[in-house]
Image (cartoon, rainbow, N blue to C red; front, side):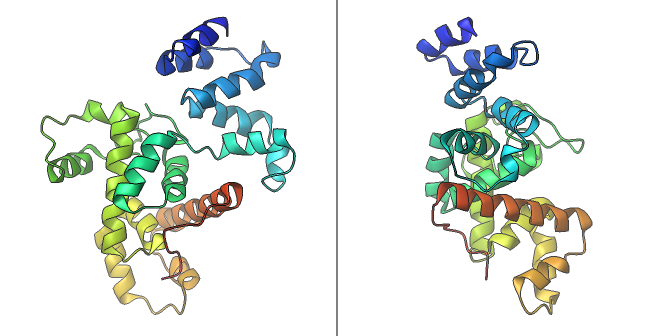
Length: 239
């Protein structure tokens, strides 16, 4: 912890994160809260997320808000992760940052180095082929798979893709979420063939079980983010 404090003074965020993740919180329980605070401050959101959901489950059974400590725990379970980067690219792409964090939470639980069994990489769980296409569209040359381990790069491509889906589906957040999981072609077919009277009915008609569950999880996170941060959503969930 002493090393993390000194590195924090120097503004070395990545190094602070490594020190924080190495703390044995079971052996040193008195370090849990300060470690979470330093983790939040230095973009080690995966650490705080894991502790909040592991040690403070009872707190998370209540509604967001309440006393300062309760709110702090909720903000670790639903962090505004990598806020400056997300806000920047969300503004450019016209995507609600709260939706970005909801997708990130369900894709990677804020772990920048995670790889899925299918080969998706990083915070926004991008397939290298998708990232390569997005890099080409942006005129970026020399893109490689390793670039996706960098949080800023991964977020930039992920938010850009959400922006593309928003334009494709006229801001329909549910279609955007479904497309992020199943692909825009599949969702386009489902929308064209749907006879559902409302968006809830359409969700229940999603033929892929994985995508059906994914949409419900991301929407639940999205609604929680809205309650917690009290911000008006940009994306439209009702079209």
